[in-house]
Image 1 (cartoon, helix red, strand yellow):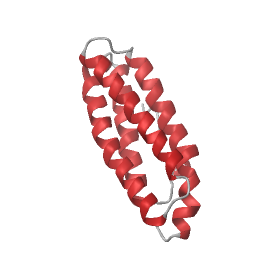
Image 2 (cartoon, rainbow, N blue to C red):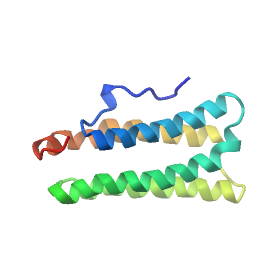
Image 3 (cartoon, helix red, strand yellow):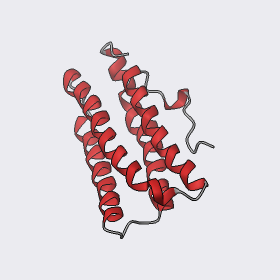
Length: 135
């Protein structure tokens, strides 16, 4: 069963960004599904690697639009991107050197972060992007 179920409340009304958010949610759900059958640690490294790779793509997409339309909260938003990337990179490094936190801790962080980031931080740009014709 999915930990995070995509619904309209998570939408930012930009098709490209929503599609990327759905992919991020799917990665978190994949880790949750593996954990539910006792295989979380077996795929944690893959999930962390996929998250790092895909979030870089996603963050570049958002930041491209921030630059194109001169989004006024770019600095704060980008700071959240940097903090997330460093945190996930730290989880990955810990996993690779054998000192990774429990899979549950990683899953909890990822789930909480993505919901908060989309529902609070990303929601701030919906009207701005809409006013600039981005859909």
